[in-house]
Image 1 (cartoon, rainbow, N blue to C red):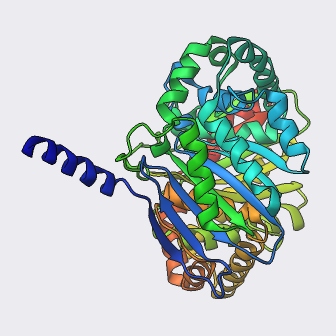
Image 2 (cartoon, rainbow, N blue to C red):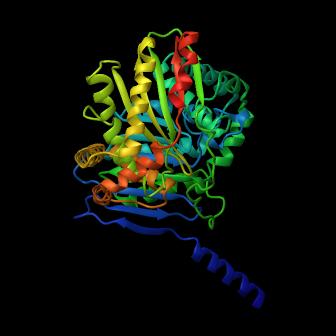
Image 3 (cartoon, rainbow, N blue to C red):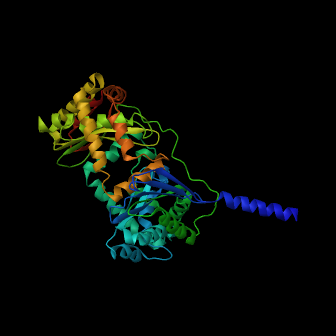
Length: 459
């Protein structure tokens, strides 16, 4: 009897531990903008933001897997899998999946990045249960048939060809390779023709089972929604699929680790018969967890974030050397990039590069005047709010925040962090980031003499 009693007590204790945990992360006024999080037994996290004033809702599932999780032989597997989850489940064919959302005027899509993948649907608030059922079914019940792998291979090879036909897009992949070399962050998200052709259904299935466990997933939903109803519907969908293997499993935390960048001063040129030369001049930036990222955001805005920015004024407005010129930052878990892009006539490449390098050096050494920093702070605050004016953007914010940071920040807190950036903060991060020796990636029809001079830009 004592033995049976011990087992019963242990079972009751285990069940007690395996309960859903709900927190209010951001408390909005009158329920507007309230962000809540529930962690289900089995490690699935569900985060919602309530916006009663709209008639829509966006539902998404974020997977803690991106192209940096691939071995060289699996390059492109994450993106390939993204395609295949739309091809059918045990309950639905590919046509059933697409027609279900089309029938209610909904939108459905997905995207793959270097550190995560997201699947989402945007619908009328009354159709949210349908969106939840379809997206959860895709994530938990994909069958990954051999014939679907073969058919989708052709579509992905066309996508790779389409990207390679757009040098303004392709040059950013080249720049990642210039900076990171042949490690996962330096490889293209889409993979290559060779790696995509080599992927088999069996290898993709193993990749799917490894990375689409509930502990690796974050559910995010924003709009005119009820948190508790979303939790019940998601839980029912995952339980129906038998997705919860271990009720005491805990969620996977944000990424950690270290990936060193390659030596500075590298130059890569990809010869193409294009009308323009496309260039990216850049250097290591900051990891997305670095507290200086707010100051870097202000610096990036002032340098190349709009029509009043330094690079736009110097390269386009004053000299007419390029139509498109801008700067950008990319933050990963443990490192980052800062880059300047411009597209110009091949004959103007060296003039554009000199102007860009001179501006970076000038700002690194002397900083920016207070009035430029003040204008950039205002611009960044405004663009931050305007970029969060629909349920899709809100879903992206809360889903990515939970997956990548493990915490939520209100819009007011974000605006306060931007406003707290001082001129000294910006000058300090300018010295640290822009003071490094840059590297360069170029795609275009440069002649030998022009190509030989590219190293001057990074000397």
